[in-house]
Image 1 (spheres, rainbow, N blue to C red):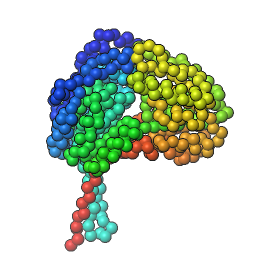
Image 2: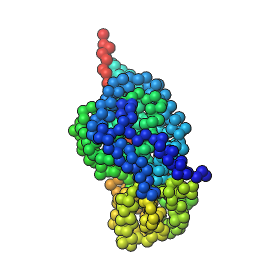
Image 3: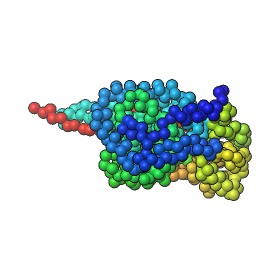
Image 4: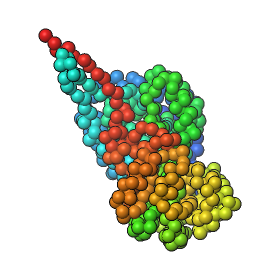
Length: 492
């Protein structure tokens, strides 16, 4: 495995633009201000990037609005070819993008490479979907007229993306928007702007017309985004992040009656029945819990194990999680990296401490790791009280609370006992039981005998307070298209 040197890191950082990308031009913030990007594994500053003003954000929306006039009429095949070129460039630059992502976000390089491949897959998928936007033509029921429908791009879009998957959450939105003929303004998370700026460089090199994609980085999301959301030129808002912030954005979007997509918080249950293949279930639990170090809305937040196998499952999961190598993501043997910042560490510690105070038993981990950076030890908890906060709130860290159940009905009830409904995981070898439980679970997605559901060709999204709208699959492009109906008189 290749060792990453300090020179490699410096070289990668030097090749990423640190300015705003507006109307096809790289520019400094109008105020000249910059903001720091921190390495979460050391707490040290990596680089400074442009810190946009509201005037910069307005310029980005103006560019998107102007570009939309011509881009909406570009041939679908041409839009698709741009996306295909961007996909090929992203794959070609995998090592560069992965290193940038690891430096700013912390995940191990192996995971970062996986995210680059995942991010690129959305560009490939929507390159193919661009030429498959269909309407319909049929006789009206009275026979005297015809019904014609067509799908058209909704207009300029605003995307607010999170820090935990800083590249994939961009392509998952940008890919279908471009395929549909929309123009976009992207506001990446202040912790991880570099991945999105690197994506903008790829689209510039792929020949995307000026103004179609604009990237505005900023330390104050509210001051930048609120004026755009209130602007009549904007027609679509898509946000990935917390439910609390999502609710605020939904309220703001009501003034302009914006099309809105919300991919919000999760509290995923992972259910293991006593007839499950235990090795498959353990592999799935490790994937569902420790992908991205637990900093994912799809992370298994509550592990529900049938009581007859719960003790063995907990011991074996603790053995696996307790033996993970926790290190800076650039280290060759790193299996888990740091959390994003000290606020995240404090939040996870608070949830673990609350559970332990309520009687939970710590099988491994249980505390932050001393030293530089924002590290928390992979943790397994048993005997967690029903009223513990850790069962209600999104953990967003490497902590696996294990609960037990006796019957199928109990498992379904416990899984649904949350305001969230993004994803659930289910392990059983009984297909009839699997289908019964799947139909009873109140979630937008389910992994059956596997610990990951993310797939560019599948609709990603939740129900209840996990949001609405879908990203990915054939359904994903629908978020960026409006339907126009034409009634045609054919009577003599």
